[in-house]
Amino acid sequence: MFKLLFFMVISLLSLKAMAEPVIVVLGDSISAAYGIPVEQGWVSLLQKKILSHHSRYTLYNASISGETSAGGLARIDVLLNTQKPDIILLQLGANDGLRGLSPVDLKSNLAEITRRAHNVHATVLLLSMKIPPNYGKRYVDLFYNVYPQLARQLNITLVPFLLEDIALHKDLMQADGLHPNAKAQALLADKIEPYLLPLLQ
Image (cartoon, rainbow, N blue to C red; front, side, top):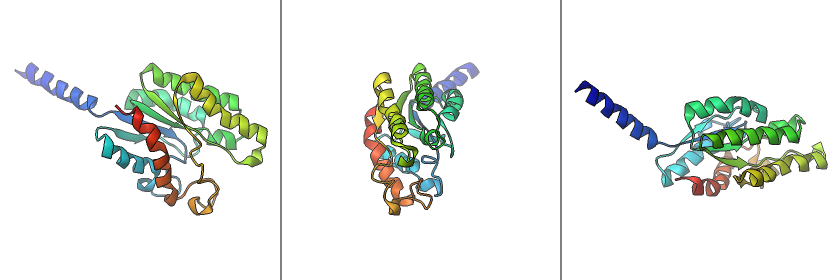
């Protein structure tokens, strides 16, 4: 009798786990709601949007302010093992660019994160980033081109520059000119939603 109850409990827990697929957001301060309350950030707003369509999904925000693609790569195995995500929203690279790191290394790191995700059958949604033009046109172009190149090579869905129509509007940016303010968060969630919804099962 005890064994039967034990296996029933295990089965119910397994069904519950299967019924709650996870989306992990692996990003930097743009996704970590830097400078604003977390509940006002685009990740929290996107969670609410998803619940209206697919109530089973849970968003886990693994974003850290200042994170680089190398930092994301260093953390990805733990996230895959602990969160067991079905989908990863990969929003990294801005800090690589601001530090003048190699676009080749950026591409390599993002590619390896994606490959490791694919190895455990997780889908990757890649969010494109750009850096300010004062870094020089050649570097800026090399940096941004990493994202569409990677999307084509690895056959993953690409979201165009996340801060397009936001970064140049002072009323949508914080005083530092780098981070979107609370007013811009709904726009970010609206931009990502149509790319994410087709990936939900």
